[in-house]
Image (tube, rainbow, N blue to C red; front, side, top):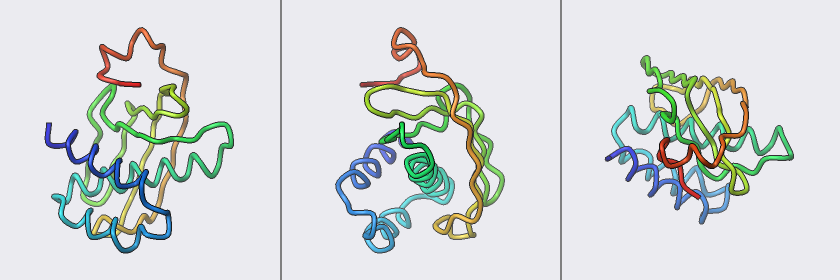
Length: 130
């Protein structure tokens, strides 16, 4: 539940804040989170930004790292083979791994793979939303 609340707050801030402001307001907000949540949130944003930059057909506005299975967290790294992201009102499967600096702010490495679209009939069961 706390993870969902933190994700909602941080996601709303991301959508309402220019990208250049990340280093100020976003960093301060992230630093208020516990380290594991900070790692997850920072990597969620990094993977959204990277997908948006790399693949013109997607414009992600939300990532859920634990849609199909819990992510694996090991120190400054998180990997999720059961994630999902939302783009233009559709949800897609996602796998990613992300490594940050010890403060969980600076992203040092990121790899991802976009999977198939998730059928709308599965959204409720997976706790996904419009």
